[in-house]
Image (cartoon, rainbow, N blue to C red; front, side, top):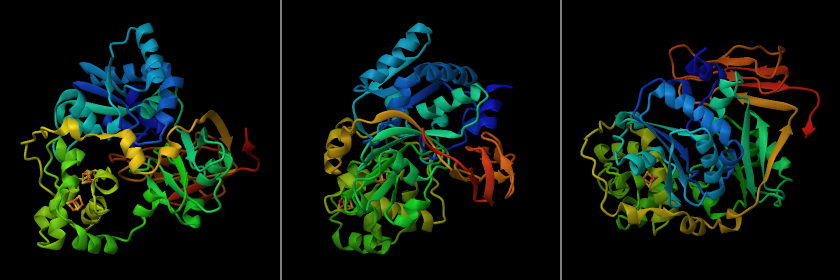
Length: 445
Ligand code: SF4
Ligand code: SF4
């Protein structure tokens, strides 16, 4: 079986973002292969853990992927401050005589955004609404490569390393079966020090924020989740995420002073895209122009405008997200005249300043205990862990399954990926949304 088929069978999807099915992403030829080891959101530590713990596995997978893509150049992008990770990877690169160049960056946000990485390394701007392949690049995350290595060994993707940090008693990196409850992860980290808390699944800028006990109790780890951050409910980052859109809209109308700060610091505007959030905010007040509202589709929702740039505490990101769902008409984009901003270099958001602005300094240097395997009694595995079409259910209630069995089959000729059982046991519930598998014993190893 070839690599693409192995990746397809294993159900590998992008581990660091929206979960693009990897067998489709790699089904091309390209000039550049860029490995994203920048882990750009503050506080996250899982990718760094993978790079220093599994450098052989990552470089092995990287060489195989580079071969099928037929690339001319391979760049491994990391932040310069990741000394231990760079050393670990460099050792393997030297030992195996791999032709890989390290691209070391300052610590800024969003260094790990794939369009920003492409620009930093190649000087090319990905067209508006486009993908890196259009400018000759494929960007892949270190977590994805770790999973490609599993596929090379004929293993399927049923486990995930997750950083559990913030207001927990024992911050740590745990390895959990996919479909493990978030509350089990928090328990494995010694529980929260707070009675009542909020949770971010992912990073503080772009992660999913949960505040209600019921939603926290229902949430599970999927193939794309690398962190669980526990914070007080009244934390700035949590509070900002809880505002209702109607309140945000009326606040925008009342308080936007058209200072342009949101636009001048917007990473997509700075690489030459025609996204100008201040114009969208103005249109919200004065013109209701659909043409301008369509620009919202260019927003990657990085959160710079909302959590960092706006002096009035407004939320252009939430407005853009709202407009994306509301305006059916597509932005035609692709104007081609992309010139990056002359001041771009000076407008990058330094991570240190970002962390202090977000009031996260307390958690920034938490030491995470590593590699704790947790076993669970039950998993709830969603069939839509990737973008595109959910996998097709192939098991029934009452069926006995073994770890690694196929439970959701990728839909033919569609953007879709296989899903496997992450636990041996009985299927106690199965529908087109999720499969619940239970077994009779468990506990923390
Ligand atoms: S930064 Fe805030 S106040 Fe300034 S233009 Fe943007 S939304 Fe308006
Ligand atoms: S969230 Fe704001 S800063 Fe980020 S891409 Fe969208 S408009 Fe630009």
